Image (cartoon, rainbow, N blue to C red; front, side):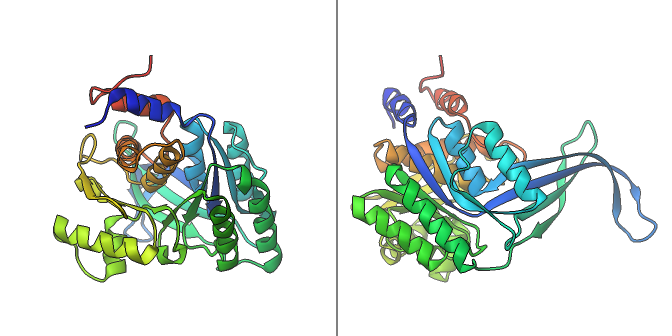
Length: 338
């Protein structure tokens, strides 16, 4: 369906692009333990602690994907003046992600998602429970103004802006409007991924909801492709966007274009998914980069589809690298990394 040379050129075009990611920075914490015994205090499993790690989550994961795909990324968000914020900032700097757009504040703790992972040395670790530590909703006016200034400083040099909204209140109406006004003023590209309130981002170039989110927004089940197409068209109009890329899990993706057809893409790779954590970040990051690089929307959607197919085979929050993407494209008869 796609020219191998064009797909390789599209990935090569990621280099030299700058993407501004505005959204919720999250510390994804993993605590690993080996099952030991059943507690005498309650009918629960006791895990013998083995290790702990922290990964970039939320807007941090979207930024990490953009960076590993070969582009420059500037995340704009808030971290608390706390140990979790220190860890996220250290992770960004350790992989070479700019921290110039990140604001530290004592008024808002860093969002942390803690996943307790259980498994023996020879078995796959499974998530037992997740504990979320969430900041209070909303931003104080001073922090909001600093974020608006950071957007104003770094936005004009960006090839695209990506909203990564995990519902923690960072993307205030004032901040969103400031971004949108700047983008409209220079005819730029802006994309949005929002877990709970996508309709707040009316006027973006493209959005990437998943199918359950689409069902919730249109108020009904989507039992077949005609129903998905009808719902996608409705949301495309309500969002007043040019492109809508709906992720459908094991059923692949559906791309809707304001001035084009609906295209249903099959899942790439195996449908035996290992972990969907962070896959949405990979999809919107790849889709945004490809559009910023000049790819047609269907080509951008296919690249995002392939990237998402790679990431769901990884355990935990993890980005996709440029070489991995080229290798996955090569497995379909398209070029591999030399």
